[in-house]
Length: 179
Image (cartoon, rainbow, N blue to C red):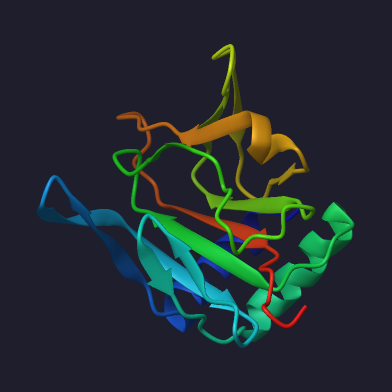
């Protein structure tokens, strides 16, 4: 949905305008710091917890609001938050998971925008383990409509063949308590 030059411009803006932090997880009693960095952005009160990590939202930046508007148009849905992942190169990845945390509106799609390096994205059916893979290119959008999270897991597979950075933006709708 975005050209190569616009995507490169967004990468620079997002890296400069957001506070990026690595996730820290406790696994087998040890504190692990992930190499990949994340930023959580959203409307007020859009906190989000995944893997035992609670995120409070940073404010929307002008470029993120512009991207959000375009993604909402493509997805035909409204979003109130965005999880951004900064993958330094192909050595950074994301294991098999579903985006099914309790704060997420189960009736809303999740829209994923890729900026930077082309990466292989895989989907695996929860029951029969069938896998489907596709390459997410610079400036491309992938919309995961309901019931994708219910029946499928997804992963960003690691690779030694990618040396460039990638930022992935996943727009979501958080269920607010007062709704």
